[in-house]
Length: 598
Image 1: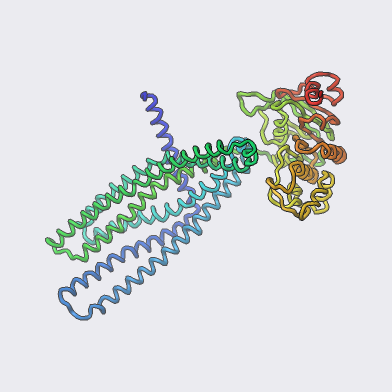
Image 2: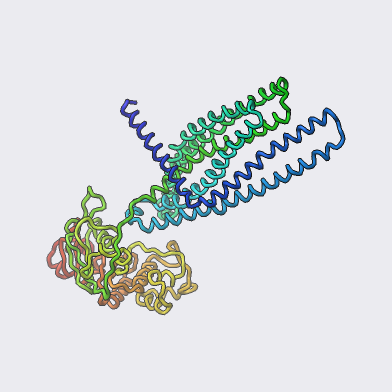
C-alpha cells in the first residue's frame, strides 16, 4: 500500500475514534437527567462495598479463632464463633437485599425511563424531519434504530452505573483497606492494577470499527426482511425466492462476521485481565507465605488479603468486559444520535384566513430532487377557485412532484406558491395540509375498522357522516356486505377488500375530510371502468366550489376537466380543455392517440 493510502486509512481511523469518543461523552451527558436515581444507586453501591469489605474481615477473624483453638483445644469454640457467624449471615442477607434493590432501580426505573425517553425523542424527531429523509432511508433501518439500538443504549445504563461506578469505588476502597491490613501484601496487587486498566482501555477499542459495521448491516438486514415480507406475493409470482434468500444470506453472513469479530476482539480483554490478576494471586501467596514464616504475620491476615484480592480483581475483570461492551453500545448510540442531529425542516406559524376560496398560483417555481438533475424550471400556473384541473404527461415529467410541492412535502428552490394570494411558505405545514384532501395512487389503510379508516382525517365525524361519505364514493354497498359491516376490521394487507375497494375507501376518506382543495394522484388507477364512471359522477356532484387537481395517466378520466395542463420535462408545454388540446394536435394529442388510437 502506498504511503498516501496508509495516511488516508490512518486519518479515517482517527476520525472514527474521535466520533466514538464524542459519542461516549454525549452518552454520559444523556444520563444527567437521571442523576438523582444514579446517586441513590451509588449510595447503595457504597453500602454493598461496605458489606463486601466486611465479609473478608469477619472470615479472617473467624479463621484466627479456629487457628488459636487448634493450639489450645479450649472448650467453648462454638460459643465464641456463633456471634461472628451470625453477624456474617446478617451481612450476607443485607447484601442480597440491597443487590436486588439496586438491580430493580437500574433495570425497572433507570433503564426503562432512559429507553422510553429516547424512543419518544426519536418519534418526535421523525415527525419534524422532511419527507426526503424517509424517501432516502429504508423504514427497516429507522425501526432498527428506534427499537434495537435504543434498547442497547438503555442496557448500557446498567453497565455504566453498576459495573463502572461500583467497580471503581470498590477498587478504591479495597486498595485503602489492603494498605491498612498489610502494606507489604498490598503493593504487588496495587502495582498490577494500572497494567490491568491500561490493557482494558487499549484492547477495548479494537472492536469498535466492527461493531459500527455490525449495526449498520443490521439496519440493512431489517430493511431487506421488511421488504421481502411486504412484497412477498410479487416475489412468489416471479419465482425470486432463491435470489432473495441468497441476498439475505449474503447480508446475514457479513452481519454475523462483523458481530463475531467485534465480539471476539472485545471478549479477549477479559482473559488477558484475568491473567494479570492471576499474577496478583501468585504474588500475594508467595509474599504472604514468606511473611508468615519469617515475620510472624497471622494466617488470618493473609487469608483476608487473598479474599480482598479476589474482590479487587473481580471489578477489574468486569470493567474490562464492560469497556468492550461499551464499544458495542457506542456504535448503537452513534446511529441514534445521527438521526437526532439531522436538520429539521423549517416551519412558519401563519394560517389562511377563512373562508378559503381555493385560488392556487405557482410563480416561477424551480425544483429538483437532485441539484445535478434539474426537474422543474420556471413553472407558472394560475388556477381559479372551484376549477377541476388535470395534470398529465409522461412518467417522470413532474406531475406528482407538483403535488409534493403543493403539500409541502418538499420545499421549492425558487419562486412562490400561493393560496388565495398567501405565500404557503408563510403558513405552517400543518395549516397548509389542512387545506387539501388527498387520494394517492398507493392506497394506505391501517389496522382498524372500516369506519375508523374512513374517518382517519376527520376523527370527530359521526357514523351518519361516515356512511354518507361512503355512499357518495359508491362503497357503502360492499361495506354492508362485509361480515361486520362498518365495524369490520381491515388493514393494508387485508384480503377482505379488493384493491379497487381500498381505493374507494380512501376516496371516501377524502370526501369526509371536506377540504377546500382536493388532490387525486392516479386516484382511479385501481378501479374498474364501471366504478370509475360512478366515481367521476360523484366527483362532479361533490366537488362543486372546490379546486380539484387530478393527476392521471388514463386520459379518459379527465376529459371533462375545466383545464388540462400538459407537463413535459418539468414545464407546461400545453394547456386548455380536452377538445381544444386535441384540436391543436400537439403533445397531448400524441398522448391521447397512443392510448386510444386502436
